[in-house]
Length: 149
Image (cartoon, rainbow, N blue to C red; front, side, top):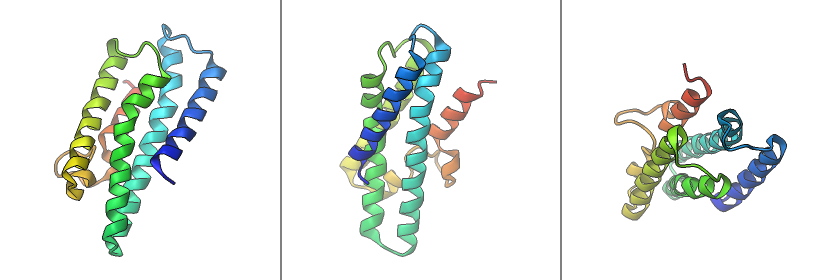
């Protein structure tokens, strides 16, 4: 399943959520309830791609490994535009910081793709030396947004 197909599914789910919640962008609670499912979907897909790539490397199937890492990077690259297209009013306050961080990691993913370096793509969203995909930046951000205290 390619990234563009996955993004279409995410957009459909987000539109359904938006309609159900009758979003008021001035209400932070509504905004959180709208954007969090999207971030969780992308975070979960990112982890699945990472784990599939890790399995491909163990086989070893270098072509599949590289393909999955490129898909993982493209998922990050598409996230800022997906958020911007789906959510009007993003860019101020706390949510602006979230989007800025997402854009930072999307730029890192773009650099990784341009370099063609699979080791750079394998480490996307991970702190230097970190190997546990459950401890990636997007996952931590989602958890912090869900549980701010």
